[in-house]
Image (cartoon, rainbow, N blue to C red; front, side, top):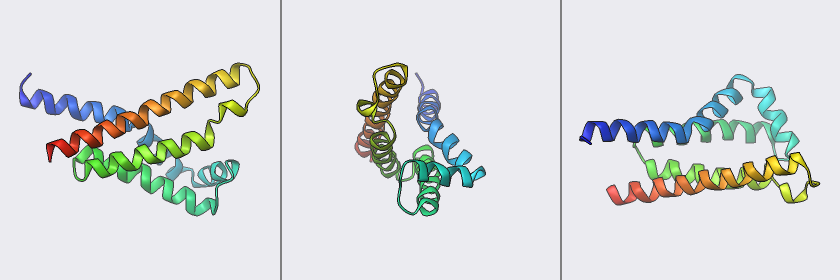
Length: 129
């Protein structure tokens, strides 16, 4: 594949990886009371501050990844955020056996995969520098 095609496919892949964080950050920004309510639901401290920081993190880290500026930092930030959010929101082992637990377990392991992908992006970007 030519270098232009490689760059385009790489950017599309990174956009796909960041899509949920861009969508989540924009949704929280457009419905800040809902974002605060979500922070309250999960028992997070200072819910309004936590919601605001989550918005900034999701959007800024995605921007870093997509622009290539400090891509490794954006990727590490989203990896850490994803791991933290996963262990806060998807504690399937505490749920009764059933469909809800099954779905939470699937989401838990999918999120571990996302965190792993962000770690690979950080490693890949470090090798290119």
